[in-house]
Image 1 (cartoon, one colour):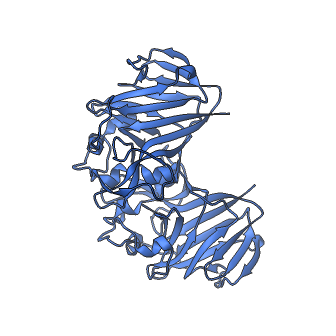
Image 2 (tube, chains in turn cyan, purple):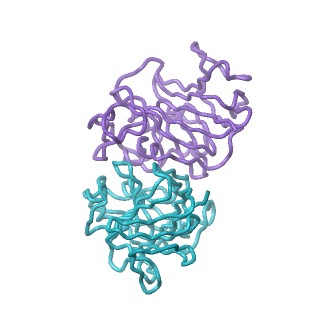
Image 3 (cartoon, chains in turn blue, purple):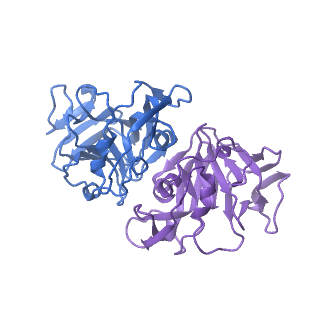
Length: 230
Length: 232
Protein backbone atom coordinates (compact mmCIF):
# COMPACT_ATOMS: atom_id res chain seq x y z
CA UNK A 1 0.00 0.00 0.00
CA UNK A 2 1.30 3.43 -0.96
CA UNK A 3 0.68 6.73 0.79
CA UNK A 4 -0.46 9.80 -1.06
CA UNK A 5 0.76 12.97 0.64
CA UNK A 6 -0.82 16.32 -0.08
CA UNK A 7 0.84 19.42 1.35
CA UNK A 8 -1.40 22.48 1.61
CA UNK A 9 0.15 25.94 1.63
CA UNK A 10 -1.49 29.36 1.59
CA UNK A 11 -5.03 30.70 1.78
CA UNK A 12 -6.94 27.44 2.07
CA UNK A 13 -9.78 26.70 4.48
CA UNK A 14 -10.28 23.06 5.45
CA UNK A 15 -14.03 22.75 5.81
CA UNK A 16 -16.02 19.92 7.32
CA UNK A 17 -19.28 20.41 5.45
CA UNK A 18 -22.73 19.67 6.82
CA UNK A 19 -23.01 16.99 4.17
CA UNK A 20 -19.96 15.20 5.50
CA UNK A 21 -17.37 16.21 2.90
CA UNK A 22 -13.87 17.26 3.92
CA UNK A 23 -13.32 20.10 1.48
CA UNK A 24 -10.27 22.28 0.92
CA UNK A 25 -11.54 25.70 -0.13
CA UNK A 26 -8.94 27.82 -1.92
CA UNK A 27 -9.83 31.47 -1.36
CA UNK A 28 -10.05 33.78 -4.35
CA UNK A 29 -7.73 36.63 -3.38
CA UNK A 30 -5.69 39.23 -5.27
CA UNK A 31 -2.36 37.94 -6.57
CA UNK A 32 -3.01 34.45 -5.22
CA UNK A 33 -2.74 31.53 -7.58
CA UNK A 34 -4.45 28.20 -6.97
CA UNK A 35 -2.03 25.53 -8.09
CA UNK A 36 -1.32 21.82 -7.90
CA UNK A 37 2.37 21.03 -8.00
CA UNK A 38 3.74 17.54 -8.48
CA UNK A 39 7.09 16.21 -9.54
CA UNK A 40 7.08 15.45 -13.27
CA UNK A 41 8.38 11.96 -12.49
CA UNK A 42 5.17 11.23 -10.57
CA UNK A 43 2.82 12.31 -13.34
CA UNK A 44 1.37 9.40 -15.32
CA UNK A 45 -1.01 11.33 -17.53
CA UNK A 46 -2.51 14.80 -17.78
CA UNK A 47 -5.74 15.31 -19.66
CA UNK A 48 -6.78 18.91 -19.81
CA UNK A 49 -5.08 20.65 -16.89
CA UNK A 50 -3.37 23.82 -18.05
CA UNK A 51 0.12 24.47 -16.70
CA UNK A 52 1.66 27.82 -15.75
CA UNK A 53 5.13 29.03 -16.66
CA UNK A 54 6.61 27.08 -13.75
CA UNK A 55 4.89 23.87 -14.72
CA UNK A 56 2.27 23.95 -11.95
CA UNK A 57 -1.26 22.82 -12.76
CA UNK A 58 -3.89 25.57 -12.65
CA UNK A 59 -6.88 24.97 -10.41
CA UNK A 60 -8.83 28.22 -10.75
CA UNK A 61 -12.52 27.55 -11.26
CA UNK A 62 -12.25 23.82 -10.61
CA UNK A 63 -13.91 21.43 -8.20
CA UNK A 64 -11.46 18.57 -7.80
CA UNK A 65 -12.16 15.13 -6.39
CA UNK A 66 -9.62 12.40 -5.86
CA UNK A 67 -10.04 8.83 -7.06
CA UNK A 68 -7.84 6.14 -5.53
CA UNK A 69 -8.00 7.05 -1.85
CA UNK A 70 -10.62 5.71 0.55
CA UNK A 71 -13.90 7.58 0.95
CA UNK A 72 -15.08 8.63 4.38
CA UNK A 73 -14.27 10.95 7.23
CA UNK A 74 -10.78 12.27 7.77
CA UNK A 75 -8.84 11.95 11.00
CA UNK A 76 -7.03 14.86 12.64
CA UNK A 77 -3.78 14.72 14.55
CA UNK A 78 -3.44 16.94 17.59
CA UNK A 79 -0.85 19.03 15.72
CA UNK A 80 -3.55 20.06 13.25
CA UNK A 81 -6.02 21.09 15.96
CA UNK A 82 -3.27 22.92 17.80
CA UNK A 83 -1.81 24.88 14.87
CA UNK A 84 -4.49 25.50 12.26
CA UNK A 85 -6.63 28.50 13.28
CA UNK A 86 -10.36 27.94 13.36
CA UNK A 87 -12.42 30.46 11.44
CA UNK A 88 -15.17 30.46 14.05
CA UNK A 89 -12.67 31.22 16.79
CA UNK A 90 -10.80 34.05 15.09
CA UNK A 91 -13.88 35.80 13.70
CA UNK A 92 -17.39 36.71 14.76
CA UNK A 93 -18.75 34.72 11.84
CA UNK A 94 -20.60 31.47 12.33
CA UNK A 95 -21.91 30.50 8.90
CA UNK A 96 -20.19 29.79 5.60
CA UNK A 97 -21.46 31.13 2.30
CA UNK A 98 -23.83 28.49 0.89
CA UNK A 99 -21.76 27.78 -2.23
CA UNK A 100 -19.16 25.96 -0.15
CA UNK A 101 -21.61 23.28 0.99
CA UNK A 102 -22.27 22.31 -2.62
CA UNK A 103 -18.87 23.24 -4.07
CA UNK A 104 -20.59 25.68 -6.40
CA UNK A 105 -18.83 28.53 -8.20
CA UNK A 106 -18.42 31.68 -6.12
CA UNK A 107 -16.48 34.91 -6.44
CA UNK A 108 -15.04 34.13 -3.02
CA UNK A 109 -13.57 30.77 -4.03
CA UNK A 110 -10.81 30.01 -6.50
CA UNK A 111 -11.11 26.22 -6.31
CA UNK A 112 -12.37 23.30 -4.25
CA UNK A 113 -10.56 20.04 -3.54
CA UNK A 114 -12.51 17.24 -1.86
CA UNK A 115 -10.55 14.78 0.21
CA UNK A 116 -11.34 11.40 1.74
CA UNK A 117 -10.32 9.12 4.56
CA UNK A 118 -6.83 10.28 5.40
CA UNK A 119 -5.05 12.00 8.23
CA UNK A 120 -4.46 15.71 8.65
CA UNK A 121 -1.44 17.02 10.52
CA UNK A 122 0.67 20.13 10.72
CA UNK A 123 3.93 19.58 8.90
CA UNK A 124 5.47 22.98 9.48
CA UNK A 125 4.69 26.14 11.46
CA UNK A 126 5.70 29.76 11.19
CA UNK A 127 8.38 30.82 13.65
CA UNK A 128 6.28 33.26 15.67
CA UNK A 129 3.78 32.41 18.35
CA UNK A 130 0.69 34.55 17.90
CA UNK A 131 -2.69 35.33 19.39
CA UNK A 132 -5.90 36.23 17.59
CA UNK A 133 -7.73 38.78 19.69
CA UNK A 134 -7.91 37.32 23.18
CA UNK A 135 -7.20 33.76 22.13
CA UNK A 136 -4.50 31.68 23.70
CA UNK A 137 -1.13 31.83 21.97
CA UNK A 138 -0.52 29.38 19.16
CA UNK A 139 2.07 28.51 16.55
CA UNK A 140 0.35 28.72 13.17
CA UNK A 141 0.75 25.99 10.58
CA UNK A 142 2.50 27.13 7.43
CA UNK A 143 2.10 23.70 5.82
CA UNK A 144 -0.73 21.26 6.46
CA UNK A 145 -0.27 17.65 5.44
CA UNK A 146 -2.96 15.19 4.41
CA UNK A 147 -1.89 11.56 4.05
CA UNK A 148 -4.09 8.81 2.70
CA UNK A 149 -3.52 5.17 1.80
CA UNK A 150 -3.46 4.63 -1.93
CA UNK A 151 -2.73 1.83 -4.29
CA UNK A 152 -1.13 2.08 -7.71
CA UNK A 153 -2.30 5.41 -8.97
CA UNK A 154 -4.35 8.42 -8.00
CA UNK A 155 -6.56 10.50 -10.25
CA UNK A 156 -7.33 14.17 -9.62
CA UNK A 157 -10.58 14.70 -11.48
CA UNK A 158 -12.49 17.94 -12.04
CA UNK A 159 -16.20 18.44 -12.58
CA UNK A 160 -15.22 20.02 -15.90
CA UNK A 161 -13.73 16.75 -17.12
CA UNK A 162 -9.99 17.20 -16.62
CA UNK A 163 -7.94 14.37 -15.13
CA UNK A 164 -4.45 14.15 -13.72
CA UNK A 165 -3.12 10.67 -13.00
CA UNK A 166 -0.21 10.47 -10.57
CA UNK A 167 1.62 7.68 -8.78
CA UNK A 168 0.01 6.49 -5.57
CA UNK A 169 3.05 7.35 -3.45
CA UNK A 170 3.44 10.88 -4.82
CA UNK A 171 3.79 14.02 -2.76
CA UNK A 172 1.52 16.70 -4.18
CA UNK A 173 1.46 20.35 -3.18
CA UNK A 174 -1.79 22.27 -3.32
CA UNK A 175 -0.94 25.91 -3.04
CA UNK A 176 -2.87 29.16 -2.94
CA UNK A 177 -0.17 31.77 -2.64
CA UNK A 178 1.10 34.82 -4.47
CA UNK A 179 3.84 33.88 -6.92
CA UNK A 180 6.25 36.09 -4.99
CA UNK A 181 6.52 35.88 -1.23
CA UNK A 182 4.58 38.43 0.80
CA UNK A 183 5.17 39.46 4.37
CA UNK A 184 1.78 40.65 5.62
CA UNK A 185 -0.78 38.29 7.14
CA UNK A 186 -3.82 37.40 5.10
CA UNK A 187 -6.41 36.18 7.55
CA UNK A 188 -8.85 39.00 6.79
CA UNK A 189 -9.21 37.49 3.30
CA UNK A 190 -11.00 34.51 4.84
CA UNK A 191 -13.88 36.85 5.74
CA UNK A 192 -15.36 36.38 2.28
CA UNK A 193 -15.99 32.70 3.05
CA UNK A 194 -18.27 33.65 5.93
CA UNK A 195 -21.76 34.92 5.36
CA UNK A 196 -22.07 36.76 8.66
CA UNK A 197 -18.58 37.84 9.67
CA UNK A 198 -18.00 41.51 10.41
CA UNK A 199 -14.40 41.05 11.47
CA UNK A 200 -11.57 38.53 11.51
CA UNK A 201 -8.75 38.91 13.97
CA UNK A 202 -5.25 39.11 12.55
CA UNK A 203 -2.45 37.29 14.37
CA UNK A 204 -0.41 39.38 16.80
CA UNK A 205 3.04 38.12 17.64
CA UNK A 206 3.55 37.15 21.27
CA UNK A 207 6.70 35.05 21.20
CA UNK A 208 8.63 32.37 19.43
CA UNK A 209 7.68 28.84 18.48
CA UNK A 210 11.13 27.46 19.18
CA UNK A 211 10.47 25.99 22.66
CA UNK A 212 7.71 23.37 22.70
CA UNK A 213 7.85 22.81 19.00
CA UNK A 214 6.21 19.56 17.92
CA UNK A 215 6.56 20.15 14.21
CA UNK A 216 9.20 21.81 12.09
CA UNK A 217 9.33 25.60 12.28
CA UNK A 218 10.61 28.07 9.75
CA UNK A 219 10.15 31.71 8.71
CA UNK A 220 9.82 34.07 11.66
CA UNK A 221 6.78 36.04 10.55
CA UNK A 222 3.33 34.54 10.18
CA UNK A 223 2.44 34.73 6.49
CA UNK A 224 -0.11 33.00 4.30
CA UNK A 225 -1.68 30.22 6.34
CA UNK A 226 -4.40 27.61 6.17
CA UNK A 227 -7.49 27.76 8.36
CA UNK A 228 -10.16 25.27 9.41
CA UNK A 229 -13.93 25.46 9.75
CA UNK A 230 -15.70 25.31 12.08
CA UNK B 1 -2.65 -6.15 20.10
CA UNK B 2 -5.71 -5.38 22.22
CA UNK B 3 -7.71 -2.18 22.25
CA UNK B 4 -8.59 -0.31 25.41
CA UNK B 5 -11.84 1.57 24.98
CA UNK B 6 -12.82 4.39 27.31
CA UNK B 7 -16.33 5.81 27.07
CA UNK B 8 -16.82 9.29 28.53
CA UNK B 9 -20.17 10.56 29.79
CA UNK B 10 -21.20 13.75 31.47
CA UNK B 11 -19.48 16.96 32.50
CA UNK B 12 -16.00 16.26 31.21
CA UNK B 13 -13.83 18.68 29.24
CA UNK B 14 -11.25 17.14 26.91
CA UNK B 15 -8.37 19.57 27.13
CA UNK B 16 -5.28 19.71 24.99
CA UNK B 17 -2.87 21.42 27.38
CA UNK B 18 -0.12 23.80 26.38
CA UNK B 19 2.34 21.23 27.66
CA UNK B 20 1.03 18.64 25.23
CA UNK B 21 -1.10 16.47 27.52
CA UNK B 22 -4.54 15.26 26.46
CA UNK B 23 -6.40 15.62 29.74
CA UNK B 24 -9.98 14.74 30.65
CA UNK B 25 -11.10 17.30 33.22
CA UNK B 26 -14.07 16.30 35.37
CA UNK B 27 -16.01 19.38 36.44
CA UNK B 28 -16.79 19.66 40.13
CA UNK B 29 -20.53 20.24 40.05
CA UNK B 30 -23.40 19.68 42.49
CA UNK B 31 -24.76 16.12 42.53
CA UNK B 32 -22.22 14.99 39.91
CA UNK B 33 -20.07 11.99 40.72
CA UNK B 34 -16.73 11.30 39.06
CA UNK B 35 -16.59 7.56 38.55
CA UNK B 36 -14.71 4.80 36.74
CA UNK B 37 -16.87 1.82 35.86
CA UNK B 38 -15.51 -1.47 34.59
CA UNK B 39 -16.84 -5.01 34.47
CA UNK B 40 -15.80 -7.14 37.43
CA UNK B 41 -14.42 -9.78 35.10
CA UNK B 42 -11.95 -7.29 33.63
CA UNK B 43 -10.38 -6.29 36.94
CA UNK B 44 -7.04 -7.85 37.74
CA UNK B 45 -6.27 -5.94 40.94
CA UNK B 46 -7.46 -2.87 42.83
CA UNK B 47 -5.13 -1.21 45.29
CA UNK B 48 -6.73 1.67 47.11
CA UNK B 49 -9.64 2.89 44.97
CA UNK B 50 -12.80 3.28 47.03
CA UNK B 51 -16.03 1.94 45.48
CA UNK B 52 -19.51 3.37 45.75
CA UNK B 53 -22.70 1.41 46.38
CA UNK B 54 -22.95 0.49 42.71
CA UNK B 55 -19.40 -0.81 42.65
CA UNK B 56 -18.02 2.10 40.62
CA UNK B 57 -14.58 3.42 41.49
CA UNK B 58 -14.55 6.86 43.09
CA UNK B 59 -12.32 9.39 41.31
CA UNK B 60 -12.95 12.60 43.25
CA UNK B 61 -9.70 14.37 44.09
CA UNK B 62 -7.55 12.17 41.87
CA UNK B 63 -5.19 12.80 39.01
CA UNK B 64 -5.12 9.55 37.05
CA UNK B 65 -2.60 8.47 34.45
CA UNK B 66 -2.79 5.31 32.39
CA UNK B 67 0.09 2.87 32.03
CA UNK B 68 -0.01 0.38 29.19
CA UNK B 69 -1.14 2.59 26.32
CA UNK B 70 1.25 4.49 24.05
CA UNK B 71 2.37 7.97 25.07
CA UNK B 72 1.96 10.87 22.68
CA UNK B 73 -0.63 13.00 20.97
CA UNK B 74 -4.17 11.77 20.46
CA UNK B 75 -5.97 11.65 17.13
CA UNK B 76 -9.48 12.92 16.47
CA UNK B 77 -12.07 11.51 14.14
CA UNK B 78 -14.31 13.94 12.30
CA UNK B 79 -17.27 12.79 14.42
CA UNK B 80 -15.52 14.19 17.49
CA UNK B 81 -14.90 17.57 15.86
CA UNK B 82 -18.44 17.63 14.55
CA UNK B 83 -20.29 16.61 17.73
CA UNK B 84 -18.29 17.70 20.76
CA UNK B 85 -18.85 21.42 21.48
CA UNK B 86 -15.80 23.59 21.89
CA UNK B 87 -15.58 25.72 25.02
CA UNK B 88 -14.02 28.62 23.17
CA UNK B 89 -16.80 28.60 20.60
CA UNK B 90 -19.75 28.46 22.97
CA UNK B 91 -18.39 30.98 25.48
CA UNK B 92 -16.58 34.29 25.49
CA UNK B 93 -13.78 32.72 27.51
CA UNK B 94 -10.37 32.05 26.05
CA UNK B 95 -8.18 30.91 28.92
CA UNK B 96 -8.45 27.97 31.29
CA UNK B 97 -7.80 28.24 35.01
CA UNK B 98 -4.09 27.55 35.56
CA UNK B 99 -4.60 24.44 37.70
CA UNK B 100 -5.67 22.46 34.62
CA UNK B 101 -2.32 22.87 32.90
CA UNK B 102 -0.57 21.18 35.82
CA UNK B 103 -3.44 18.93 36.92
CA UNK B 104 -3.36 20.60 40.32
CA UNK B 105 -6.21 20.48 42.84
CA UNK B 106 -8.93 23.06 42.23
CA UNK B 107 -12.41 23.69 43.56
CA UNK B 108 -13.56 23.67 39.92
CA UNK B 109 -12.27 20.17 39.18
CA UNK B 110 -13.23 16.87 40.74
CA UNK B 111 -10.70 14.70 38.87
CA UNK B 112 -8.22 14.59 36.01
CA UNK B 113 -7.49 11.65 33.71
CA UNK B 114 -4.52 11.91 31.36
CA UNK B 115 -4.71 9.95 28.13
CA UNK B 116 -2.15 9.03 25.50
CA UNK B 117 -1.87 8.12 21.85
CA UNK B 118 -5.32 6.91 20.97
CA UNK B 119 -8.24 8.07 18.86
CA UNK B 120 -11.24 10.12 19.96
CA UNK B 121 -14.63 9.77 18.33
CA UNK B 122 -18.26 10.53 19.11
CA UNK B 123 -20.11 7.24 19.37
CA UNK B 124 -23.54 8.52 20.30
CA UNK B 125 -25.38 11.85 20.17
CA UNK B 126 -28.44 13.27 21.82
CA UNK B 127 -31.51 13.18 19.62
CA UNK B 128 -31.90 16.93 19.24
CA UNK B 129 -29.90 19.15 16.97
CA UNK B 130 -28.85 22.28 18.83
CA UNK B 131 -27.28 25.67 18.33
CA UNK B 132 -25.20 27.56 20.86
CA UNK B 133 -25.90 31.25 20.43
CA UNK B 134 -25.51 31.93 16.73
CA UNK B 135 -23.45 28.83 16.01
CA UNK B 136 -24.43 26.43 13.27
CA UNK B 137 -26.64 23.55 14.34
CA UNK B 138 -24.93 20.44 15.64
CA UNK B 139 -25.81 17.09 17.15
CA UNK B 140 -24.14 17.04 20.56
CA UNK B 141 -22.25 13.91 21.59
CA UNK B 142 -23.68 12.11 24.59
CA UNK B 143 -20.87 9.54 24.58
CA UNK B 144 -17.28 10.16 23.54
CA UNK B 145 -14.99 7.20 22.92
CA UNK B 146 -11.22 7.02 23.23
CA UNK B 147 -9.57 3.91 21.83
CA UNK B 148 -5.92 3.07 22.27
CA UNK B 149 -3.80 0.04 21.46
CA UNK B 150 -2.77 -1.89 24.56
CA UNK B 151 -1.09 -5.13 25.35
CA UNK B 152 -1.82 -7.50 28.22
CA UNK B 153 -2.96 -5.16 30.96
CA UNK B 154 -3.60 -1.50 31.63
CA UNK B 155 -3.06 0.29 34.92
CA UNK B 156 -4.98 3.35 36.07
CA UNK B 157 -2.59 5.02 38.52
CA UNK B 158 -3.24 8.06 40.71
CA UNK B 159 -0.76 10.59 42.03
CA UNK B 160 -1.95 9.54 45.50
CA UNK B 161 -0.68 5.99 44.97
CA UNK B 162 -3.81 4.05 44.07
CA UNK B 163 -3.68 1.56 41.20
CA UNK B 164 -6.33 -0.33 39.27
CA UNK B 165 -5.05 -3.07 36.99
CA UNK B 166 -7.43 -4.28 34.33
CA UNK B 167 -7.35 -6.39 31.20
CA UNK B 168 -6.28 -4.37 28.22
CA UNK B 169 -9.14 -5.40 25.94
CA UNK B 170 -11.63 -3.83 28.33
CA UNK B 171 -14.29 -1.18 27.91
CA UNK B 172 -14.05 1.34 30.73
CA UNK B 173 -16.64 4.01 31.42
CA UNK B 174 -15.55 7.34 32.87
CA UNK B 175 -18.54 9.34 33.92
CA UNK B 176 -19.27 12.60 35.68
CA UNK B 177 -23.03 12.69 35.96
CA UNK B 178 -25.65 12.81 38.69
CA UNK B 179 -26.54 9.39 40.15
CA UNK B 180 -30.09 9.84 38.87
CA UNK B 181 -30.73 11.21 35.44
CA UNK B 182 -31.15 14.96 35.54
CA UNK B 183 -33.08 17.14 33.19
CA UNK B 184 -31.90 20.46 31.86
CA UNK B 185 -28.66 21.56 30.34
CA UNK B 186 -25.41 21.71 32.20
CA UNK B 187 -23.11 23.62 29.92
CA UNK B 188 -23.01 26.68 32.19
CA UNK B 189 -21.19 24.52 34.72
CA UNK B 190 -18.17 24.49 32.43
CA UNK B 191 -17.78 28.19 33.14
CA UNK B 192 -15.72 27.48 36.22
CA UNK B 193 -12.98 25.93 34.07
CA UNK B 194 -12.42 29.25 32.30
CA UNK B 195 -10.56 32.11 33.91
CA UNK B 196 -12.08 34.86 31.78
CA UNK B 197 -15.56 33.72 30.72
CA UNK B 198 -18.55 35.92 31.45
CA UNK B 199 -21.07 33.72 29.64
CA UNK B 200 -21.53 30.28 28.15
CA UNK B 201 -24.26 29.64 25.64
CA UNK B 202 -26.70 26.83 26.41
CA UNK B 203 -27.87 24.61 23.56
CA UNK B 204 -31.14 25.60 21.94
CA UNK B 205 -33.02 22.90 20.10
CA UNK B 206 -32.93 23.45 16.35
CA UNK B 207 -34.16 20.18 14.94
CA UNK B 208 -33.71 16.44 15.16
CA UNK B 209 -30.61 14.30 14.80
CA UNK B 210 -32.53 11.17 14.08
CA UNK B 211 -33.50 11.40 10.45
CA UNK B 212 -31.73 12.23 7.28
CA UNK B 213 -28.61 11.04 5.70
CA UNK B 214 -25.85 12.69 7.61
CA UNK B 215 -26.15 10.89 10.90
CA UNK B 216 -22.80 9.25 11.41
CA UNK B 217 -23.15 8.12 15.00
CA UNK B 218 -26.00 6.51 16.87
CA UNK B 219 -28.58 8.76 18.44
CA UNK B 220 -30.77 8.35 21.49
CA UNK B 221 -32.67 10.50 24.03
CA UNK B 222 -34.20 13.61 22.48
CA UNK B 223 -33.10 16.06 25.18
CA UNK B 224 -29.55 17.32 25.47
CA UNK B 225 -28.37 16.92 29.03
CA UNK B 226 -24.96 16.18 30.54
CA UNK B 227 -22.41 16.31 27.72
CA UNK B 228 -18.67 16.35 27.14
CA UNK B 229 -16.87 19.36 25.75
CA UNK B 230 -13.48 20.05 24.19
CA UNK B 231 -10.92 22.81 24.70
CA UNK B 232 -9.88 24.88 22.86
